Length: 369
Image 1 (cartoon, rainbow, N blue to C red):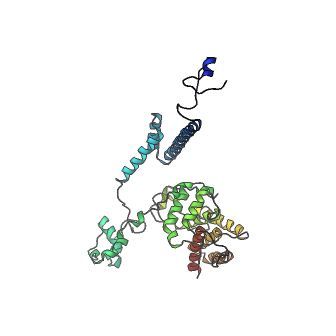
Image 2: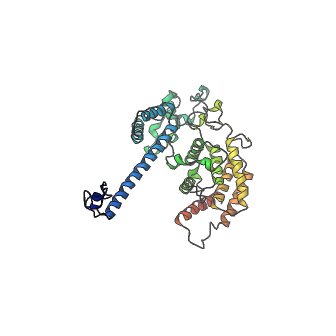
Image 3: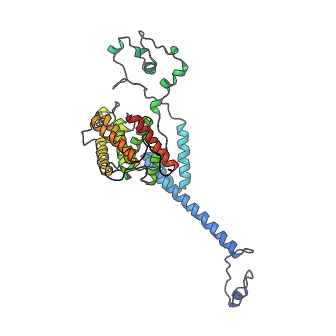
């Protein structure tokens, strides 16, 4: 006997003495009921995904904070606080703290290895002592010289910013540099935090004047795991140069492979210029890059092979091994021509690919001409 749809109980259920249960609301069709249930399930799914993302962010937050902050977050969880509310509280607190950060206090141009200029050097009148480069240090430490007064008023306001803006305090702000995992692209080092810092310093100090690869394409493919514009060879080559060129950074002295006796100077890694020292991190990155380069050179050429060749050339030049570095420069030219970098392509390239090729082509042209 079929249900006749009469509410609150149909004749079939009434005659059998059973409770009548409807899957639809009153005045609601079956299709409308299915749509309503689908919308409810979709809302539940979104809520679960949001909760899962909040938990993941909370775990990352606990890992990245010091023990005191991590313990505070843990106590809030134990007390039954919602993960999303904890995240909002921490993020809002960070924004308030940023408004109270003390201004940059490091010297722009400190005398090598010590803050004060030796008295025997200050006894002589030198152009440096009357320049704007010396002015900030003199004002901060009371090293003003009567024999060479500072003449900042002689400078036009147009020329002051490059001397007084805190360029040394600048940092690269890119969310992708916080999420990449270089350890997935190299077997030389497993310290992702250290390698992220090296990449930041590389992009800040080296990349602006030697843009042989496209930064956005490289980082996007590094995150997605795509090998088109990012490769293990290229990552090792970049990190090798970063180890050589990285300046002093407040986070570097606390890292391994650093000499505690030289933490006050600008040298960074203690073995950064010892390209013959197999214990140095830069040596290991460079050795792995050269090994991978030799393997890939005899296979199908790629744009990352060309870019890595140019960076290895630059790194060897920094080590004053320019005769060996020239070999990689010649390889770069040969690879560029094998890729048809300076020829009209037989098939139109995508906008992204053309942009990457243009970056490398122009940089190689100006580098080896």
